[in-house]
Length: 117
Image 1 (tube, rainbow, N blue to C red):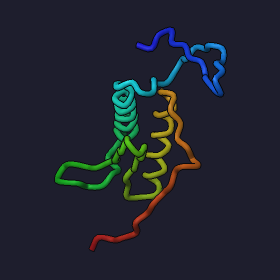
Image 2: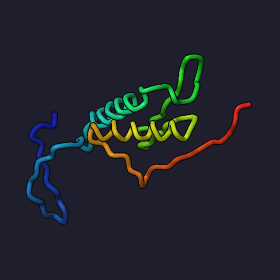
Image 3: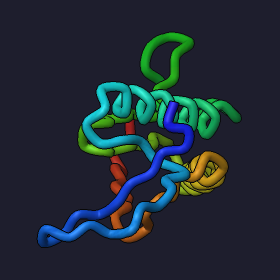
Image 4: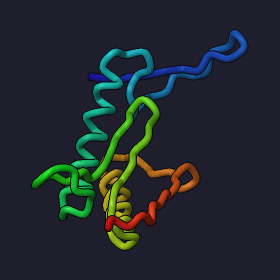
């Protein structure tokens, strides 16, 4: 779809030399957000498929993650710190396999120590 795509940079009325664009999606293209969602969904499914380590949602269902693409937020859910680390490592490896990188600078961990009685 984007084969042989070339771009240049316009700054201060001047244009740079043309260069090949080998990855990414075109800004303003209506299919770009859909492509991003498809890739993120694929990555999340592969990263959380190993075993059920999420939270029980309903009988026989587990909630493993929550994706909010507009804000680029991905929440991984787990009962233990060890499971969370395994899930995060798997997510990072899977994302890297398709050219995505998890920003450690922008990443946060939130815990809830509430015990169910």
